[in-house]
Length: 178
Image 1: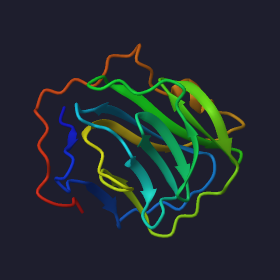
Image 2: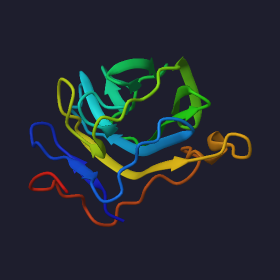
Image 3: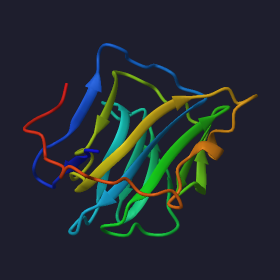
Image 4: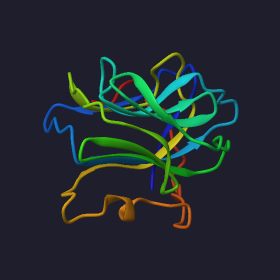
């Protein structure tokens, strides 16, 4: 398995969009395994976002804690600070108009009923906000569900699962990935 490594100041990021843009704004989730690197101090660092220009839905690193944001406004941060050099699954689920941040499968305090506005549909990983995120990302996914029949929380990853196994050392890309 290969992963995307992002180093502060490198400008490395991954941008995916174009062929199959997504514009959903309800009953969907996004999840990514994150391993912050030593030296990651956090400011307001983007890890994974569903759009640019403010980011419709965003998983971030906010002064040492995991964060969830919609349309550029943070609605939740994790109760426990992130641990440097430790893999952690982080997710946001928007169900029936309410978005919740999950860390290791556990809902964090604070929710949002703001509708994500997708201005430019794309999936973006990496630098953004006030400073670039530094670390390794793996196992990213976006999914939709039917709240009447599906339980998206039950399908979130937890640390009890094996963390991603990196068999190929990650390399910072030379520039954005299109």
